[in-house]
Image 1 (cartoon, one colour):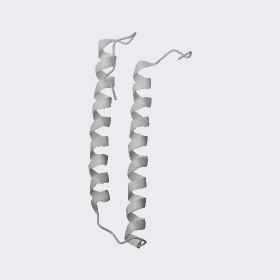
Image 2: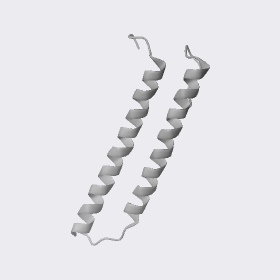
Image 3: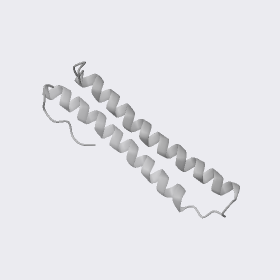
Length: 85
């Protein structure tokens, strides 16, 4: 995620968007840490533990994507782009 750059938004809008992006980055870092922990688990191939780990990794991937999407929508709400964007 890159920092918001001045376009038509005010400095206040840019600061608010950057604050939202900071929260999103922090959450995504926490998700990445959880993913590393789950991926490092030693499990027997074909076991229920392996199935559970795969599901946990899938859930973490979805959580990360949804956080990125939430950040995008929140920044869009702050910037209020024109309808033709």
